[in-house]
Image (cartoon, rainbow, N blue to C red; front, top):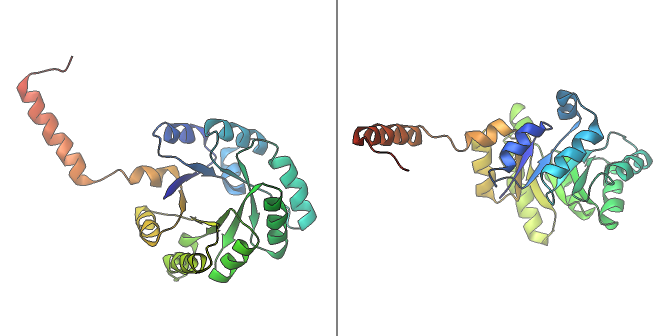
Length: 218
């Protein structure tokens, strides 16, 4: 499963990219607002940090013509930009037009398997179902991922399932077990994946025993 960082914080992206574990980045208007920087400037910097990896940058127009105008600007920032559009009729029209022209498209705000089916038929590169927001209203978000996986496998769609609104390591584990192609999570959640109390205890024990040897390496 590919790991995308869901952030516009370039320092966090650089740090995660250095681990070799990062496969891409997703942003949205809320993350850009949190970063407090110019949208295109941030996207360009992120694309430079992770060259060749998809960087999702979202248009904000809600009509087809507006989406296409904004997409034309956004996709010129770098070759690895994936234009992000909402799962609406106009968003699907923009998706079809953009992917037919060779542009990566991330269709976002997916909350049903039927929506995901439409996105795949429109040629989406990525579909972003939001598991955390589903969990918030009492619907198991991972059931949605499982349904989409079944449908996409039934018809051999190329669209990648990009699990979004990931809140914790359990979401990551369940997405991987189902067979999602990608998950995007805040850097803090990605860093949580490495944590385990027995690992920490083992390190502490080894270090204590090593100190007793009185030795040094090098």
